[in-house]
Image (cartoon, one colour):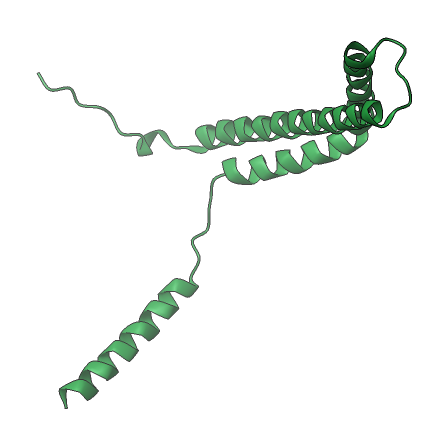
Length: 131
């Protein structure tokens, strides 16, 4: 008898918890959403303005590096091409990191400022100093 009552009680408890877990808490802050929006805008800006310059600058750095390692008139060898290709990839990655980090940081700052302006002064707690 006790096991049947325990089983019924645990089943109703699990149903209640499932109903409680189905309810999602709405995030009313702008910080997280504007950070994601900023990251998306950074990807778009990188695709438009950063992909080609990152490749060019990385290629120039690769040519300079290959010239200093293999000699100034860079021959069309495999090693020189690998150095230039690797530096082009690094240039594109650095440009992408810069665009996405800058845009998401700007979005985070904007969201934090908006959340700070939306906060009511009554919700702020005053610090009481002990004498």
